[in-house]
Image (cartoon, rainbow, N blue to C red; front, top):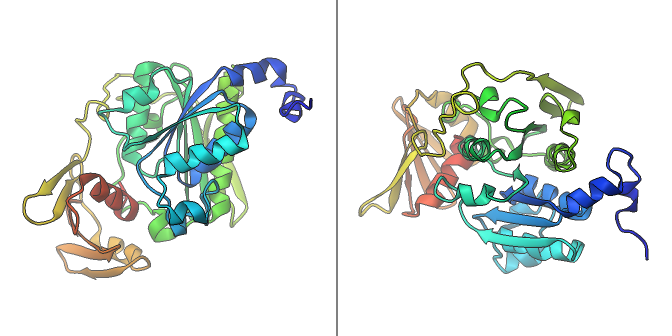
Length: 339
């Protein structure tokens, strides 16, 4: 019988010993969008023994441009992404155990995501959740690999507690709301998602087989449209990093989390970013024009999308009108406004 992994085990740095380590590994994948789909597919094809899949969303038609695990039947059936991913992964490699959880990963449940995992894959779409994963993984001593993509840009970085700088060394504080482009405002080239996740998986495999010295020492960045590739070196931890040096897990304990609460009788949710910060309303309005109807004055920006009206004030606070679902409101805020 042909060994399905023969081309992989012929690669000298991996070999049969590395393949056995992959088979014995458990990887948690948080977010099954563009990044998570590619990473999950590659890890399943590589023979990782168990994949734990976490996502809060369901499959929609505009996902299919870049989320390679899904098809039109998943859209028609309104399939949750975690369940659809598990089904497709089982068809790719029945030797891989897939555990699907349709949940919103938060400070309340993230320790369970990390517990007993050999590695965590970041397939999320916002800085808050990544900083939460960073806290949880550092606390548990679990490696994780960050990845992101927007427009034609792909990024990824491995974090191994005690051996590499952590994500908060790279991003000590959250950027102001509305200051960072998102896929829903700047678009996304599907190849950028594949590039980011491919580098992410390469780093993950190195860690899982024990070749930690071979991971890139910094942040991988690529602009596929302009053909530019580089590693931004990050060889030392930030001297006063709140997470990996001071071990203050502000996202894990909720003290740095944005506050969100349903507004009684208004079918609306208010979101207040942690710490508060000034927002350039003019810049935000221009960036949102490509995604929906925008109105603004000197005090606020109103933005209509998906049957929801989002009002953003100068301090980053927002009222998401048209839903009392806090999770949905937070997701819309992250998609269109940013962190």
